[in-house]
Amino acid sequence: MKKIFPKSLKKGDKIAVISPAGAVEPSQLEKGINLIKSKGFEPVLGENLYTKYSNGYNYAGTEEQRTKDINWALNDPEISAIWASRGGYGCQHLIENLNLKQFSKNPKWYIGYSDNTVIQSYLLKKGFASIHGQTVKTSSFGVTDESYDLTFNILKGKPLKYTLKSNHYNKEGNVEGELVGGNLALVYALLGTKYSFDFKDKILFIEDIGENFYALDRMMMSLEMAGVFTKISGLIIGGMTNMGDEKENKQYEESFDEFAYKLISDRISKYSFPTVFAFPNGHIHNNIPLILGAEVSLKAGKNVSLTFK
Image 1: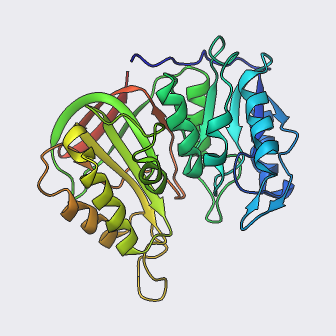
Image 2: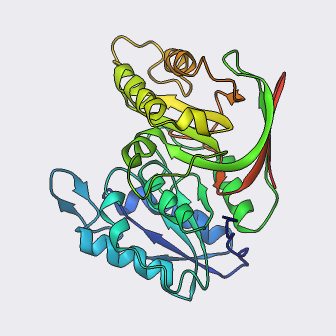
Image 3: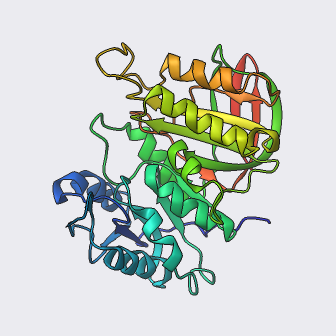
């Protein structure tokens, strides 16, 4: 299925800011909301953006409240893009009740990562591309200006191409295909459901944070047993941070955890698809955006290039 790309934004367009998962404080979004304004766009805050509902987790409202906000943002004709305030947990609550009736007639960019992988997988199943990039809330370790600037470039319709140094775990090769994926824990959580990504001939991107090493291996094992690695044509691994035990792992605060990469490399060692490690996207300081659903050209050699067509 050829993916549908939203139209580019122009100055003055409205960007909805919603909280589909975890709760946020106004102070945590102040910088991001001011940035939207400074770029010439109008942030429109969801009714339940700052709502709090505790039910084993601090959600940004009940399932009904969060569903109401995302359906408003998806379908309101005055909204030109949707930017998630944060991830956390809770997006799986919403996908059974998403309404794309007006969205399908007027697609708009959805921006987020982490738990938002669930929403982005849903949109891809319906044929719509989205931006896997920094949320309005910056993480505790901050985020580079470039991470946001490149996201605004996508919104404005500017072309996207990345070049980076090779990593010793990389597998060389050139491949073209559609980019899918996101947060590994959510890619894993959706396996076997009707909302799971279609992996056939796709280039898969994965990243994660805060997982024990055995849990990382378990998720990779599940992908393997589900046949994902026999279907994909390429693999890109982004940030792996806060992995393992904080007291034992000397690289706990690092963006690209060496032992996490070794576990992944060992798990995919028998497969020949081109593989790129240490791509700067994920729960890391330099979280540059990707376009899920885009056709890309991946070249992995002495240097790495990722070109969005």
